[in-house]
Image 1 (cartoon, rainbow, N blue to C red):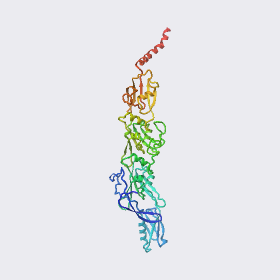
Image 2 (tube, rainbow, N blue to C red; image 1 turned 45 degrees about the vertical axis):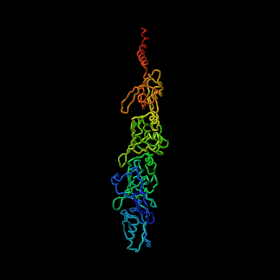
Image 3 (cartoon, one colour; image 1 turned 90 degrees about the vertical axis):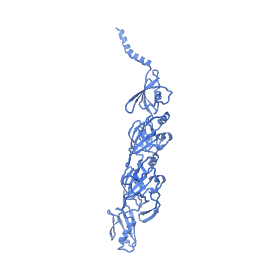
Image 4 (cartoon, rainbow, N blue to C red; image 1 turned 135 degrees about the vertical axis):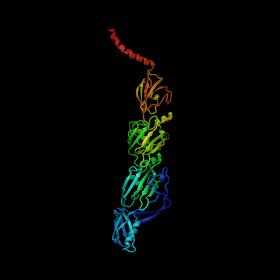
Length: 488
């Protein structure tokens, strides 16, 4: 249960057929959350003085069914239902307003009415059944709105986690450490109860799972900072939204096919033509079984390009009650150190940006190209004087030399000193670059650059072969005419 006061709170607990009992329950303050909002940062209307009792006494309202017993006068014992106007029609003494009263207050009010008829009367009021609770929930839940929750027999009131589950669970934008219950009071300002669900989730402190009352309004605050590790923990809780449901996301930047995608557990992998492994079930993601993560989104978009800067990936996330969240991820830590927390669990409407790298050394390029979210192959067109000209498939982050060798290497007619690299740029322009060939060179932007998808490598013939081909082109038609010339 929630707590933010330094002294015990009196707790009145009623159960069906049992007289009200009063107990003293010590209340412990919740631990500070890393992204807890200050009162000044709360949405308008919620920055009221914070009081966090363990549990309030139940108050009566229309629809409640009561059993009233007047000891010593069994004929006065009756069952009553609280009417829509908040009254009960007592036997012999008429209507009595009980709306907003606790059971103890109701006992005193009824005893005062019967005092005119019975001296030294003792009245006991117990609950037969509770009215349905009308509750509201807003903020970072999947389905905010109002809910009518039935109180089962025995008077076990629904808790805040039950309401959150009924509302579809917390979104990945939520701050479980700052949940607020706003409880209307008969007089004065609404009571504000702070709840720390992180405390419940991490330590099992069930006191944080407060029982709700009719008219309670619950607000789930957005997080000010998103910790990818805690995001995975939240997704694993039973009060989180279903992170395996299909989500719509957008991905732009250094991926093979930027655009909008629908991710589901059986998403087709655009880079391989097969089915993307579900994140967390085959080593490609790490957040949990069946969760939809950022690496799956990148796979769906065809994988990263050779120029991707995976150290500075950004996810922009819209919240229901605050400014958009910007989450920065370092997928290099995922590839190099196995930091699975960087494989962020996605939610509906996320936008992913893969920036362009300013520099990438050969060792990093090789490791990045072997990542699960890189494409399995890229296509490069090698034309001209090679053994098998045409489109070749090479691993991502392959070099120009590797593409030439994939096409069988130079044939006897090839000019082996240099080749021409033709590239279609993202802005629609075309660049041509003459590159000197040296098969002993490693990755080098001038002599052995990394090739990109759909690059064209042109291998020209030697000067002598080109001259001979030109001469043949001229003489061949003339040779065809010569036999006819000798006939005349």
